[in-house]
Amino acid sequence: MATRPFDVQRLDHVVLRVRDLDRSEAFYREVLGCAVARRRDDLGLRHLRAGASMIDLVAVEGTLGLRGGAAAGPEGRNLDHLCLRVEPFDEAALVAHLALHGLAPHGPATRNFGAEGDGPSLYFDDPDGNTIELKGAAA
Image 1: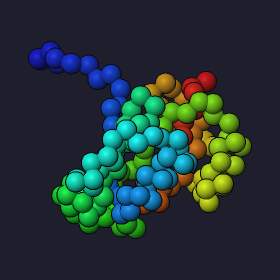
Image 2: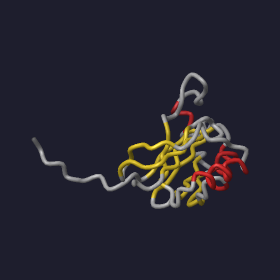
Image 3: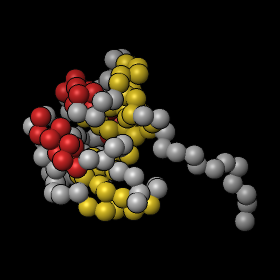
Image 4: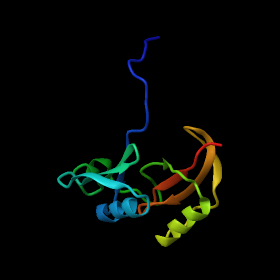
């Protein structure tokens, strides 16, 4: 068996295809606190800083987005979910913050396995129906 010439270190970025680039950028900035790191309007692409990682938003009608076919909808999604490790994980504060943005979690926080082990998770959807998991520390 050949030796792999690399080790995976962390998630670098996730690319989401979105219907409305401005709406999605506002959502990720206002609700999750991501910051725009770079804009590529010629490609319909926004790079958002999410802690040590990036979330890239691609307009489905843009140069890059057209390569992916139809936009996600009730019969298909761009991905299952995106998990963001958050600190602190205060369920009541998270739910209140989501409510300020007209959002509700799928249900109460549950314990799930992640990169650090079992910890609390809260799920909700972005404007395009992509599920986001906010994950707390393993305990």
